[in-house]
Image (cartoon, rainbow, N blue to C red; front, side, top):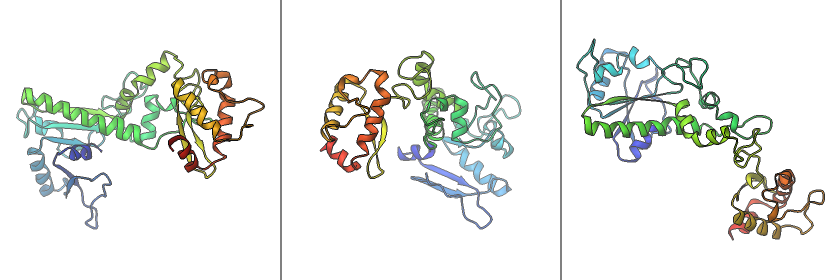
Length: 299
């Protein structure tokens, strides 16, 4: 993702692949705008090619777990130098961007155990960050594909770090290591909901899926239509809720009710009525197909 975003905005991006046994390279569905070269850096000739490429580059993106690039003799000290074994680096203007799943320091204030050498996936990073527990779902949190940690907290935060590193280089003339990880990046993206949850504001309920934005609110939710398709309803502001109720009720039988309870615009912030409101909305949306509802609200 990070390389694709940079390529989309004009960067020349080269992906380095290692050929497999039949000579093909790893498929990259995020290859838009990238060139690629198949090289095995574990061979002497392949290592020289990779070294030459990075010596001429502005940015290197390291997507591996800690220690992989060092074992390949392509760690930051090779290019940026250090004060001990290699005082002069091969490319001291290089922005060496490292993107891992867990923090490279082994842990942080919200991690009770070190994770830096562990493999993981988006779902694991969501869980360790604490954000997963805030998601809605019946009986357990449900997760939104692999968008938040992999691409949001990972790839996009990495791009931000690269750009800031390039800005700093324009002043100092020197490159640097940019460390990003998906757990920390996700926590950063989730600053707003995490703080609101900690302060116990009504945006998030005292328990999961009982607040305005965590699946508990009937007028900020998803409903199934008669054809099995879905509609999203998001009318938090009173004037928009009133307009929604007006159009919704006009499109349905006048006697639609739940145990004698009927929906009005005045019910919006009566939380005791939310369970009945949700049932009524579910019942109503299931009476018509999605295209019908599209015409009701957009026609």
